[in-house]
Length: 129
Image (cartoon, rainbow, N blue to C red; front, top):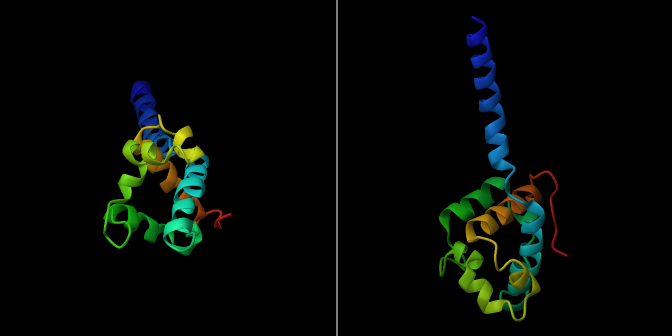
């Protein structure tokens, strides 16, 4: 009986803690630096203006990443986190150079976390600066 209680408590703890730990892996601060120094710079230079994270809700940012369409569907969002893209701009972009060794999937998750936090319905709606 005592063993069963211990197993139940262990199961409850793992069910409640492990999803939180998986979500905590993303580094929103690194995502913020990358977004502001890479995404914002590119949008300012090539698309006519920066895009604040607070222009979309958390659900809209999630849908954007799931659709994986950037520039009105001309290319994939994930390309902008790729080593190939970062290598192509690292001579002129400090963040691309600084994060050149970060795995693409990790960097994308970091930016997603920042955008969720900075979304108009996020914990801390953000503006580009």
